[in-house]
Image (cartoon, rainbow, N blue to C red; front, side, top):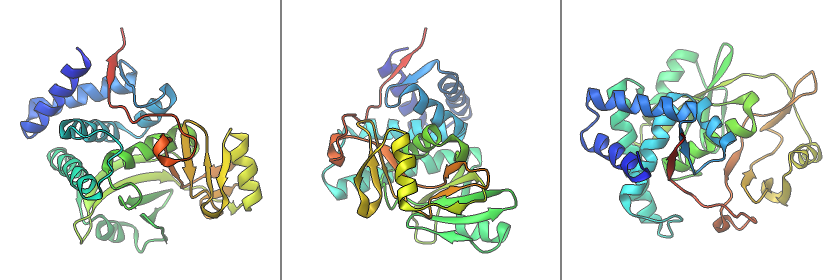
Length: 271
């Protein structure tokens, strides 16, 4: 199968409104992606593994978002905000239709998780956080990313670079305002905040360079890493450092942080 054959197949699945045989084919594609037989050129091998550890639900949603983006005929980055919003809604609607078919759609996730877990324990710029005995459940919006494909990238990259606090996608939904949301589960880790200088030492030990201390932004030519402040990085009693939340992206030239990567959506099939 060629790259074009693959995406034409997924676009046909979308057009058919996810018939049972098409859902089985999507599952097979996810298995091939997770096993490495489908190589997604958007990611490095480690990043593709990070996508896979987000679960089959995450993998399929990432492929559906990419197929929807390819069908738009747009080339990233999208400079017009209204067009980007339209593209985002097309991706979100596609994922929504699939999620309802397979049973991972949650109507108003914040209300559902409040009933399940009680009141939220934290709220950030994009996420509502709930404690579920041994793990955290997070409802993540698209505020920082606009497009689902970029929010799903964030999960893949987080899992690749910070696997100890990996995010596992369990479903999707919309809040009371109709805004698309991703629901993830993450291990709960007890720890204490770190100072900014300690966080900088940690980030630099991973090869990142401090780019802007005002918004805690670090980068390599490959990865943009921001929001790395004392509420998002903790040290456990054993001394291990855990990044529990961050803004992490493929570092493209458009971010103006010394990036040299492109947002690809091609695949190849390993022999």
